[in-house]
Amino acid sequence: MNEGRELIEALAQIEKEKGISKEILLEAIESSLVAACKNEYGKSDNIRVIINRDNGKVLVYAEKTVVEEVEDPVTQISLANAKLKDAKYDLGDIVQVEVTPRNFGRIAAQKAKQVVVQKIREEERKSLYNRYYSMEKDIVTGIVQRYVGKNISVNLGKVDALLTESEQVKGEVFHPTERVKLYVVDVKDTTKGPKITVSRTHPELVKRLFEAEVTEVRDGTVEIRSIAREAGSRTKIAVSSNDPNVDPVGACVGVNGSRVNAIVDELRGEKIDIINWSDDPAVLIENALSPAKVISVSVNEEEKSAGVVVPDYQLSLAIGKEGQNARLAARLTGYKIDIKSQSQAAPVYDDILSDELFYDEQGNRVDDDDNYDEDKEYFDDGSFEE
Image 1 (spheres, rainbow, N blue to C red):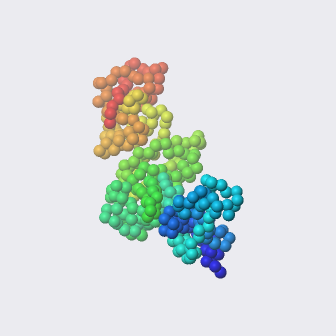
Image 2 (image 1 turned 60 degrees about the horizontal axis):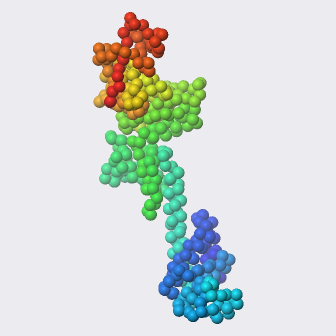
Image 3 (image 1 turned 180 degrees about the vertical axis):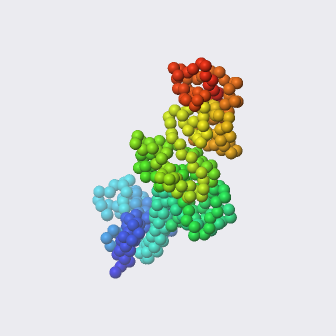
């Protein structure tokens, strides 16, 4: 069996086993052989290499311009010699002349081997990149390998990812062979293979965990409208339902808290507040400050700010430890929020704004002027930057 036929059969086998097109490999070999011809002819601009797709025979052609008098034999052919090939040739025409060097088959075999090895590596790298690129913005389960300084090497199957210190939750400690869920922030293609950025702190990790744990979130019945997270400590999520018969908060919490507790366990004790979403900013802000009770919410749409009044005994709860509850509520809603106690707000404000929520002294909500009683005391608040 000749070398050419062996080449064709070998490429067919590679196509079958590796999924790399035989035609792509042949074209790559032809291109590499054109470059190799530069050593023979001093240039390769006018050289074409053709590999017979059936028997693998390699032929080299030089494209030469028909001229009256030849000055460069590599790129030119005389009119007389051109007409010997075909009487129709005239000055200025391009003639393909076979110039296959001796022993070119051996050179071709060497180049073919180099090209095939390179192409296999490229295709495997590309395949690996595509595989992990499809996981971008999703969660993956990895196996902890070792600490690299303050970073953690995590095996994701075919490649290792580095969980950098900045993407780790403060206080979390992992041990080799431990399984861990990670959010894939991005995947970049490099000459050494895919570079994968993973995170344990990203808010979207919480969203993906809810999608995995809660059927109604996964199928779109319940939507997670907003997330605010301080990783390792507390997360607030706002949810809504596309089905009036499905309670979005209840669906996410699960029977006896089974669903949310599974996520809390995965996040190693991180607290999760689940609230109802509302298109009304005042209602949304009130919900976001849960578990604190709210007396009134004053919204300034232009400045994206809100003033909130709470009962005196609820002030510290509304603000939260080191301001965390108010801070997360502001991120969740997109509003700057100022929180005042009832006694702080009472001397300052007299007017009732039409876009606010109010409660009377008995805790009954007053939504419009018809329900307003001048003999009762109400509390209002202005806009404020957190």
